[in-house]
Length: 478
Image (cartoon, rainbow, N blue to C red; front, side, top):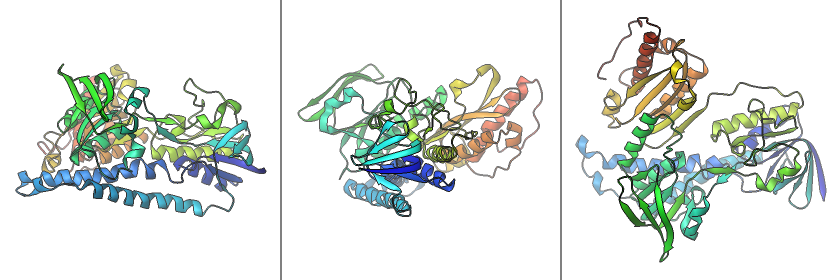
């Protein structure tokens, strides 16, 4: 049995854990990084990057098949070789993973411990069977894993998760996708565009965390034009018949249907990797889901010397937030007990399906509708969107009715990943509608759709104050 004494022990070598480790060392602390699984972040190995690689291949085929209206023939004859597609995805995925692993090779000798960590007491960890780590402070950054509803386990080895999908040697002919969150929408559409017959089943009507009903409906309609998608599915029976997953369900039009599939994909979210840690011995308070209670401005768990960061805290499941949280947790662990609170960046999420979807800043359902104006822009007639033949979607921006300060936005449409960034920056800088409308908008660009929404909100804001808005240039019809 060896015992290692350190200032900061970081559990988990993903995005948050590596950021915490670097921050603690930069602050002068003696730190170790502990990893019990494969090296390589969730993003690189099974999340952001392989899903975007699959989408890129699928969208390339989809766009080529849609060239006929532009006078370019032959696109309909194009077919995907799914074995080659998946080989390409894995090959490029492995490139990203190797880059992450390469970072760990630069860590000081002995600072990366391999093995499952668990608490023996608030400041003491066991790593594997033979190593004890006495850490004055601990950062928990263990990430999350696919969450599989019990009722789906009836499908046995025909049930896969997003972690499994990228290891398929070729794609199935038919697949049922459970879930309507970001990863489900991205993977479902990608598979459909690669000629897989996709049926997607959501629960409770939720789609990509969009709480603004017209925006959610616009995205739903766009996706339903490509594959079967029921955000509020009524499943009557699930079974495995003759080795095939079989679903009996009631479709939105009331029809009773029976469909058989080759595989079932559970894309129903991810759950924090906390059970192996023996948190009952950590001396910290947990919520009803077993996740430590913490202050998101410091990442500190109560008043303890334990901090948490990344997907395992169950709040913001996005890489940029995991990196921010890891840096904050590592820095505060190093300086404990003199922890420093910071103002967090505005919440911001993107779904990379087509049309893309964004949720930025304050969510619609958290706003006081009596004190909020909503500006709207449809992309149906937006000039650049029509030129690109991507004129689907709707953008809503929310602003304080009295001050005009931007509060949030939800939308789906073309290039929404870029409009979302502009909105996130404007909201974080606390710009007003007037401030934003004084900024330049080129022509013809999709960003003119954002200007339309801002102008609509600005007009409503002035109407609330019974004032006349200033004259602004227009690009009507474009």
